[in-house]
Image (cartoon, rainbow, N blue to C red):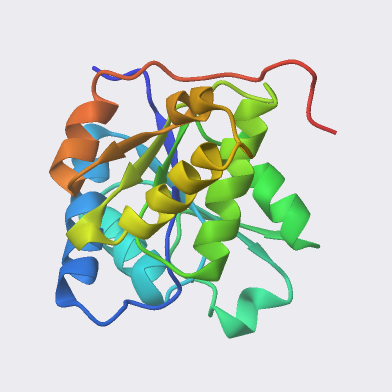
Length: 193
């Protein structure tokens, strides 16, 4: 049994142009529910966010949504989530996502997903936490993201040790299998905020 009991998933509020993205979201949601891992996510019922949450709920799993008040209409807060936390700002949303999770999984998404991904990797680099971070390269989606990090390393803007802050997996099945072997991370030093 995994020590990962609660997983933050960062993903898109759109489903993207390839059907494989939504299919990966459904597979992830079903897999999390069957593994007994609570989904912690941005709280929307649209896009891949909604697909993952719907799949977790349909398979009998637990879902914690965290959404700032101003996005409850734009991202259409998921009314069936097991628990929904409405925050006052994006910053408090991200902090709550962090606090509620043992690990992080990045799925396909856009600018918001990139923001969350880089912030959580940066927090790990700064030793604010030591929670595992997986990037799921569904249909090659993550390749430009990883290439950008490699470019920053190559240009001397990031240390090569940054490669150890996250892992790239090639599929949802690989991510679910990896979650079985990971240990839950914790707070680092110095404390957040």
